[in-house]
Image (tube, rainbow, N blue to C red):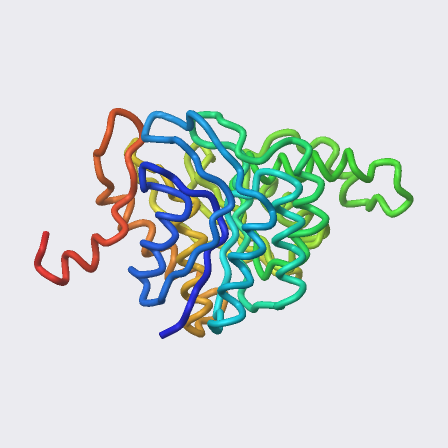
Length: 288
């Protein structure tokens, strides 16, 4: 069985973060392992508190896994402070795992900052270049680009593409999504999957691999229960890559998986409920 590691924060309500990642790994036929970066107090209505773990315990967790178990894929989620990012990048450089999926978790659906403002530069410089693929949504993509522009605007290497992107303050069209994906690739991500869930109508996701664009159409499912969708999609991609599927196949399979999970989402709590990670397996088992 392929072994997949998630490095992310814990969601006490079970809908996102480490808990969603582990459920997704299991549902997609892989063995899930975890390195916890932070503890969050959250539920379907919001994030109420965050406590970051020390860089030493994060490094110790990573060492414990890699010194004992072969790792076939790594998904990185919530990494809120610079020390956490430095610890992860140090260990990724040491162990050089394959199939690194970076989900740049920045703001929760309730508006809580999960990535500290001062940490964005470190994410761009230290984690993005180590990823196999990065999976930002539209607000995250804009945030990454804006941070990068401020970092390097006075640098002689500031590219023509970034100068062109000075007017990119919103992303509302496929053309703007394509530009954003090209910029994030320029920043250092070898593959960029820009998720279109925040578009008004079209729910297309766009992959840019440095040479061409690939489009993943998806039906828009009208439900409020979308807690943890980004975590789940990136984890499914990671599991599929670990299983040996190509990047295109991995994304297609992950899209199909998250679509079913959202279609049959769970109306739990008083806010934004979680997706149903095991719906397909439950259905096959005759439980549903």
